[in-house]
Length: 298
Image (cartoon, rainbow, N blue to C red; front, side, top):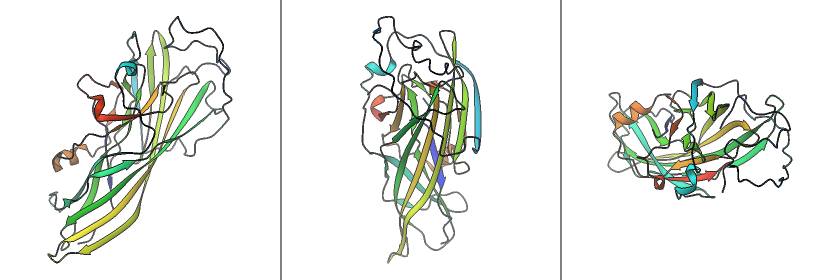
């Protein structure tokens, strides 16, 4: 799995998923991942209110589609034997702040690499434009306390690179397709079809982010260098339009320390590349991630 990296500019400094969503009210339709041993006892269907996304889903910086993605049959859910670290609170992970001179040389020294991803809040509602489907609206924040020692005698630009959260299917281990958020884009929409046992299902995934500087202080040290103390908050909202029976969505956060990437790598990663659906990957260590249950079993 290619890790979803994201980047965002700071202020310039001077010195499953689905086309066939089912029919309205068809709550008794067999779920595609159910086995034949499931109980026939009816389970009361919760009353889900009507609602409307807080963002205009037709207005995104980048929109992408992908070819039909065929899901292989499986004997048991991917997430059931992976010992996934499910969490229900804020988590810490890593980021890298970079100040660059005119030649794209890094001129700062980071004094902190730790950021925080807040526990997501989840709303679920129906919408008349998507009969037979539910919309999951997922809101979370990422807090970046920047502490950097850097020159104060000339112009430079700055940005920071971090791991964007990812979403993955509990049943198949398929990473939901997305777009890398870069310094040039703050929103995307991705659509396409998953095919399982001859049935076609469409994924709608939209992501919006907004950043703000909560505090910013600069002090000149006796050596002539500048000590920057700045806190940036990124507020993100994700939307998933899925069939009303779907219950397999996990949000995952990369928590391993990979702050040793070179400036060249960070610059190359700063592009709005499309990431198609792909498996979590046998070479990936689930211990490098923590997971929040969005619609998936807890």
